[in-house]
Length: 138
Image (cartoon, rainbow, N blue to C red; front, top):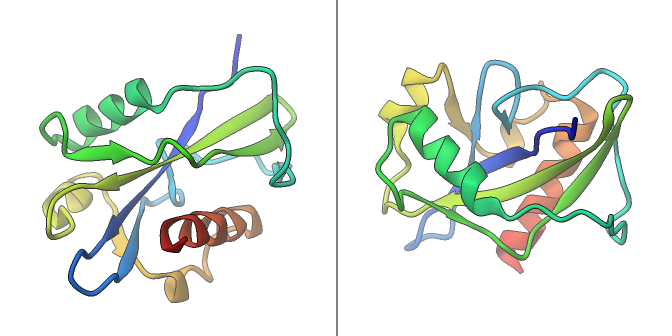
């Protein structure tokens, strides 16, 4: 059975460029933490199986109680994490509204954080945030 992909959800303010990530009680990956022995693969790692983000994004919208189209996939981003259960794809998506959906985050026991507020995350999650941040800022 393949390992389920994880999703990093972010909001980029269109007027200021401020980037915030949705952080859940278990970390930044929707919707479950990585195993303890997880390790981020090199950026040039290219597996034979690729995941299309649409289904994962729609699942996130449903989970957060948001309408269809509230989250847009960042199709050019993909990271892979090596775990004892197999490689886990990590995808990236952005909230499309002008402001972050704070109420949806609270309903899911989450909150929006900046990169500077990520010290409590695991090393792998901080590395994933760095890659996502670099991708979004170009």
